[in-house]
Image (cartoon, rainbow, N blue to C red; front, top):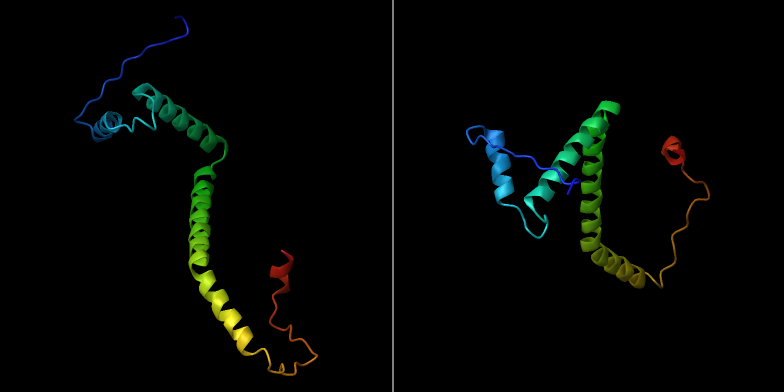
Amino acid sequence: MGKIKSTTLRFNLDKPEQRAAWEYLQNLDKEKYKSVNHAITLAVCDYFERQERAEYDPFFESREREEIFVQRIVEALEQSLEKGLPTFLTSYLLKLVGTAGVQPVEQSTEQNTDNVDWDFLDG
């Protein structure tokens, strides 16, 4: 029993932050959190770990927000591709089938590379 510690929490419901905390704890998703104690433990650990990371890395929160933003963009692109790719491939294949017997137009032997951004390709 020496490894279990107890503490008491008080919430002043006249203060908006404390009222919000109280309401969160009263409306916990019982499937996600085992108990109020479990939720408070996760919240306290997350809070202090973030504080430590921000102390050592002042750009931590900005970088984290950027990563979340980029992830949202990637997910949106993936969803758009999933929706649009079948239509694109179908129209492309129909175009190929429709031009199957047509001779290709002569292409110049010179390649126009004036508008290629070589720095972008390297890096």
